[in-house]
Length: 473
Image (tube, rainbow, N blue to C red; front, side):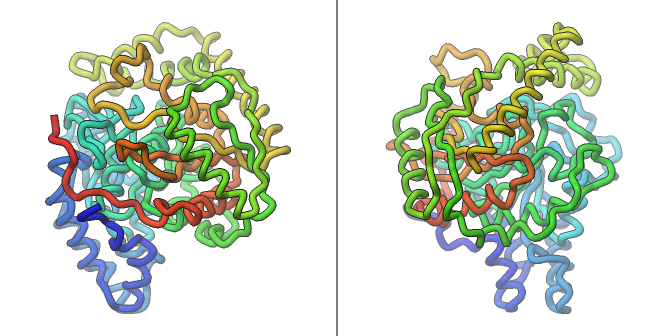
């Protein structure tokens, strides 16, 4: 593939080069900004780019490295942040024309605060569907975000801008949110690594309207970079009542854990999902390769019925709270309006019944993990479909969650889940494999993801053309 990113440095490699004095944060940040200037007109991943601020941050990082006092291993690494996180000095419009950009923007979310503390260099903010409400990435404010492997296809969402920024070499790192698959879906569609850690591991403020489902987490081209960024993001913040206590050691060290003897349940279809045959074959091949690493694999389904009805009650009742933030629903995404109106129609009893089902599912998965250390599935059962649609055209589906049955159950259970690229369809579209662990098992999940990466030729680096393969529609 001509013009690929195989030789582009990872975030970890940038930190090593900074320490050695062979590369400066200013040079790396200028390269990321040039890539955005050159490529993003084709992809529409960024909603805000601030070269002046980014370069000022990079110069400060350069000074720290020269003085031998870096803020952390990722000090000076250019990256992006999804436009759902409050970021001091930048508007957070959430993909909506209903948010006033002229209001004061003087508060950092916990994510933005942790990034500053670690010395990372945000170059800008990435696109999201309006309020992050769906599994693809388009909104009334900035339009459609396109897949860098084929711009006629969706990037996935809702963290689609972040996935595209990473995949297209516009900064090696990004941070996304995930309420039903919103990190893992675009990671799978765009061929990058996306990690939804245990609920509360990455603090959030203000809490999402979907707080019972919402996670935040890192996205990168390699598992190592994801682990390094999680180390920067994980310190808890007092503003999040769900925040977990600090982890005992660096997540980046988990990559060295021995996976021999790990017991992995492989569920190809949950017993009820239709999976694209090329995706099924690629995931099965990757699982077989894990056996060569000493992992004990057993075909086993979790055994739960599709929890989509309960998920939809939780999703829609949460979304109904956005009505206060949006005011009038005139001009909002029609699909979002329908979800809000649907949520307003549910009763307190409906919500409590859905919450009871969520808790029962959590207990079931807890018991499942007494027998299996991890669960492996496809990330998404279909490849990226035509951009600008909430569901695959001609599928007969009406709800975005209907085409991503492997992701949303683990938002309900609060478990860590990661998507790792394992190959491509015959059309050249990326395929993702998902690894799910019990709550608080981030090191185990990361070590397994790293094992998958080692065994797959596509995992060491993810490459994309710097120009799209199809004209933007």
